[in-house]
Length: 89
Figure (cartoon, rainbow, N blue to C red):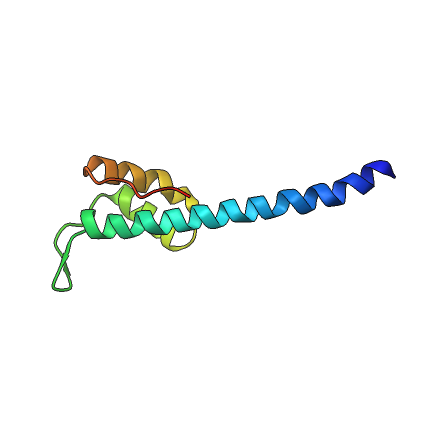
């Protein structure tokens, strides 16, 4: 019974931290996607001039769909292009 008294308050403290982290990851992913589109995938008058790599396109699509798994791929593509990464968090 004593353990049960501690579990509920502990979960109440831990769960919001996880949600905050997920929100931060999603925001960071969106910021990476914006930089990738702006500096790596160059668009001129509505026509794509430079597409970037297939890995970058997959990572971009992952971030667009809210999947933080795209973060490492976009970070790599931006670094390879000499683009400064956005602030995290």
